[in-house]
Image (tube, rainbow, N blue to C red; front, side, top):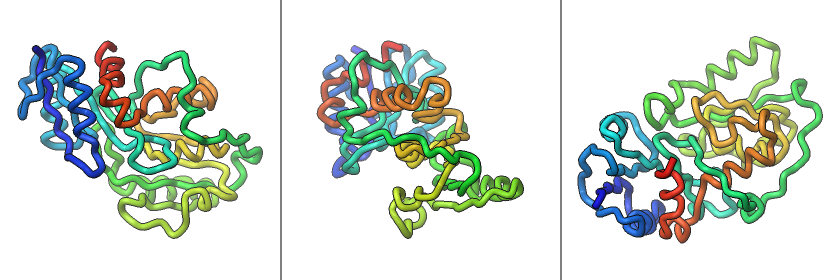
Length: 243
């Protein structure tokens, strides 16, 4: 029987019980410390620099797999959807042939027509993640300074985990033509609301939206986030582990 270690905090928010149920349903024995080996799985909340990333790297080098859980990219009620990725946060996964986006309750707005000649919003990050995915120190401030050198009108929105926002994101997006993110979920909502979004991280849930179209990119995003009840079935994990 393959083994899995679930390195995720318990309730109220991280739904480790659903994750445990899902892995058990796939036939994994849950162990307190998993050995790097083919068939074994390490389940992480994000893939943070330090022990998590070191253990994940060892697991993958040995032929095992790493599943990364994080808060959902787009949800009406916080902590009701969870992003599930293979190896790194924001890497996505297989897309099915049914519509998962519509069930999220968001209406895709027309693209704002004056792209390129209005206000630019840069969304800050907390710098959490693997060495590959964590945003560089002061990324938002440096990106804003770079854009201002091109005579752009630029605002910086701090990450809400660092500084409580003065206004809701929807209000901050009013009058904004373009949004720059590292890998922020704010960029997903901005895309839904018709703002042109540029991402700078190696991976982002909607990174290919200009090539595949917004609706297709948002559908891919929706297939990468799941409710606790869905996670408990094991389906999100099975889809990724077969990749």
